[in-house]
Image 1: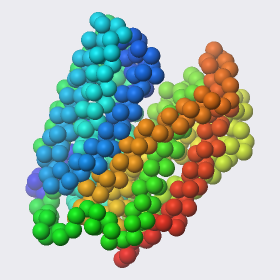
Image 2: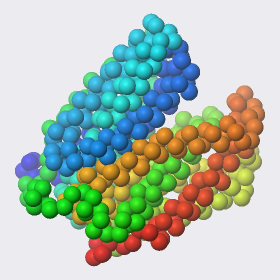
Image 3: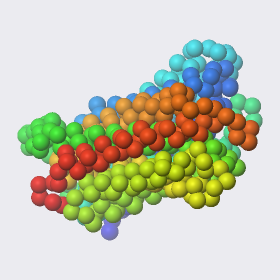
Image 4: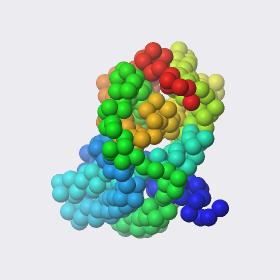
Length: 431
């Protein structure tokens, strides 16, 4: 088989190069405190950079989906340039903030570079390889998209120790030096992916006249409640996932495992990536991919309910069984969070076909944008306004507050399950 016809070289490898680069956006917690300290702002002020990055990821995917549909080479090049430029710009403004402490210019510059410019690179980079993978791996679409999206989830586990080592060894100003170095590394990776990415020669991209229908016309070929249901399922799953994952580090400390927090974070990232690959590959064997979402929501409800009823977070320290239950909840939610991402494009293609899939997938990623602004903030508000903080082994934690987050997420998971059961119908012709 010629290299130009090889699905691994033309689809899988470039998808991994793109997704393993942009997925490092989730490494934010590794260096957010260092950025705040270096430029003289609170951690809370700098946290908005990450929220903006996720917001613009979803919004750029929603608004640039048609660009991806028409030309994956243009979109993957935009992704490579914007992501690397955003990282380099973030490094520059951190450097500027170090010599101009408390400067709003530095903070706004970081918002612009890490949030907006990188966000555009994230959205276009996330979408670019997905349709190509589904075209090359027509019989195992879930496995293919799961492999790429798993790269996005695994990026944190791979890059976190590397970033930490760079911060520890680059000396004074290591935080901005790290961003400048990684901007070059990720540009090389993404640009290589851009050069390799190619749709199968046998695929004829329908022109507008041939399609005869725009994206909204295609969505309306099924009851509009069907698409609304898919969008809401996706949104709720991300919101609940972020609500728990954003508090994961403190929950782990709360149950007495502060010394193992780093290891648990890596394991949860592996579950996140494994859920992306495992759930989507499993869905290939099912007549209706929506069954996977039902399983994700049922597992999440069961584990959340058990930890709620046992007060696992509040009473977990020193109790091996409760610690196992809490860790089980963290790992299940991470796996379901990842699985929700990898199954969306294939679920949409089963319902609406491949003609406009990049544009429809992009529109659906707007749910990620909104969840990126609401998931973390929802959990933070509950923790700040309920329960009370106490010192556990020298660490300020709020066991009751973290426990209360579960009361909200279980209700949302139940709503998502009902939507999955009653709004999202099986595709007309099965699979």
